[in-house]
Length: 173
Image 1: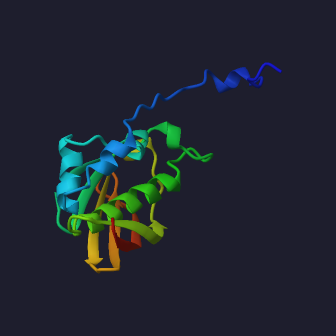
Image 2: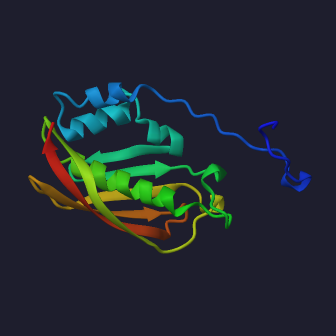
């Protein structure tokens, strides 16, 4: 066995994507002594390294307020599905990110969150031609144990491509 399967010439040359990331323990450790908003600001300002998922999928925060976050995402064809469109999992991950970060932005020092659930509605297909995705997460109802958030994702022409609702479990670190 040579390891690589024989593929038709019509497939062309394989493409690749190199992903580099930093030790995620450094980012996670940066939460100590910071409020959720201060922590997210440190990530956005580069005082802490971004989490690996952000580098893998090309996501970055561009606006932060208590209860509101905005991220941009530059999808590439490495996240295409078999139909030649951006896989819905990218939109779901982006929605989960902004909803969760919106919740984190409301938490005091010593608290974190984890997603309980997320419901995503896909409104239109997304491809490379859709341009930069802009995702906005908002806290709908903060809570000491459970917080509720929503997300909206727009494409480069400002068309709404997906919405989501999420519940997050809040806990002491």
